[in-house]
Image (cartoon, rainbow, N blue to C red; front, top):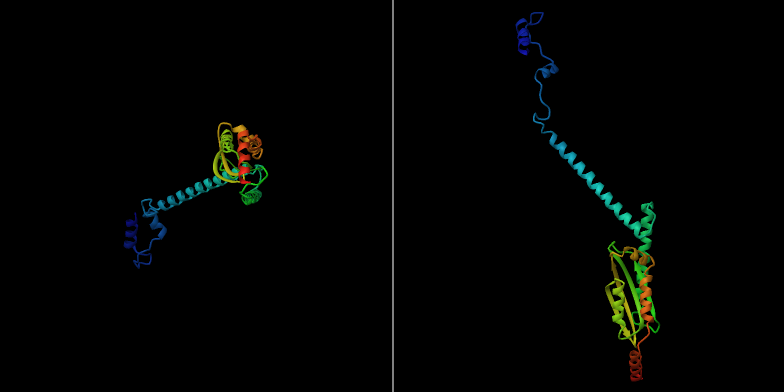
Length: 232
């Protein structure tokens, strides 16, 4: 078609007989010879596909990050016994306050004289800094030393399903002080465990008090009197 039109112009010339060729419009030429866009093979779609994949991966990663943060905040609300609707700012402020309180209480216990005193003392500090696998308690026990004290203490802790993480023992003048860090793991007695932990470690304090208040055997009293006379 283009050839015939061009030929007619070449043969016939202009109306004035000049014989000059007539230039065809660009849009008309484009309609006669269409050219495929994007390089002819669709290769221009590859960068676009990579961009879409990167965007989708970013959205999924952001979603997982938000879910992880939400899970941590929910666990923190449970530990601090906060309302589920507590906003993040209030929750973090309460967490900071709680950590400072625990740090102060731990420092007070650490500063306690390790050597035993003349008075019976029982101190139990429950810790809420567990990771969900169990609970941690710090206990200090000061009382009169006796031969069966340590075996009875071990048996008491075993009956309470407590595991000793650390133990410091000091004796002086027939008195003894035990400073213990104890952990209790999650087990099948979940309801009983929650009730005991909710009491602030009272179950451990009562058990240690019963151990301290247990009367000293006669043979122990006799040995104590002999030692005192020897020192005199």
